[in-house]
Length: 79
Image 1 (cartoon, rainbow, N blue to C red):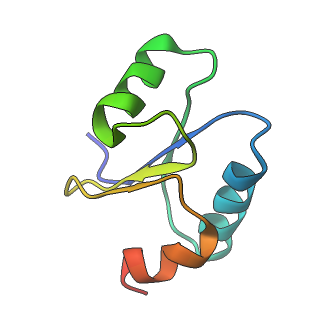
Image 2: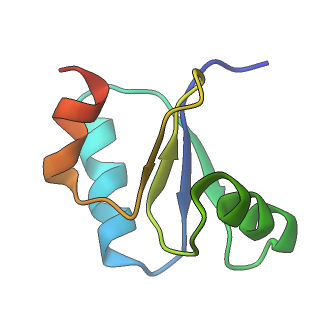
Image 3: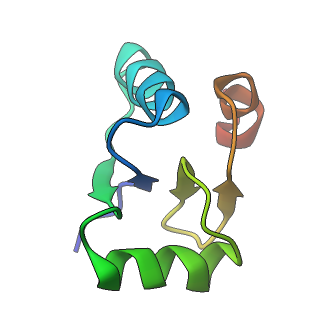
């Protein structure tokens, strides 16, 4: 089982693309989960975050950052 964060995205979402680029630039590994064409993944997104917006980041310790902008990532990740 991976201990990397899970990044829930919707293909074509500009905020999701920014999150991917930010995480990549900071060499943070993550598991990418596209929810638009995966009903089970979409249901999991709603279950963990209480909403349907992306990007949403789920940490292995259970913390959730839902519907975020990249300016929130440093503080959330403790960087």
